[in-house]
Image 1 (tube, rainbow, N blue to C red):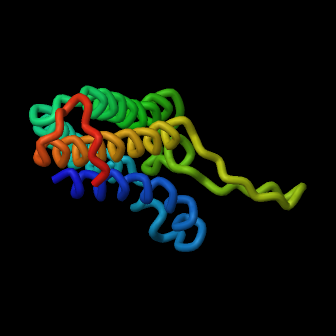
Image 2 (cartoon, one colour):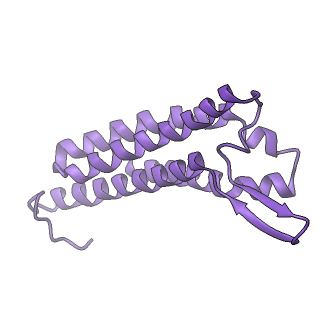
Length: 159
């Protein structure tokens, strides 16, 4: 299950990183890809699964670092979802979150320079993905060590 969790967290990170290029290259896909409902649906699938799997692993190996990374990742993921919602309430509501949560490629015609804008919500979501991947990795390693008979707190196995 941890490998599935890593895949899910990686999918979230890829979604966030690929968004500006899809919006630029395939404008018709952009609004669907960056719709807030997509972010809420992904979080609704990833968070409960991640927390259950990581907690079950923790009960076996007792590595607090897995729980800490999972909780921090979960908090950042929820914050990344709420920041664009708060921004939408203070400005005109939009059906996509490209300005407030998805990275965008900005072009300045005066200087002919392009840059990637990464809003705080996107940075939070990327950090959340990294922390959840880390938590699952700690879980995999801890459970493997536990099965090999090493002490959970001082595991020195390399596999």
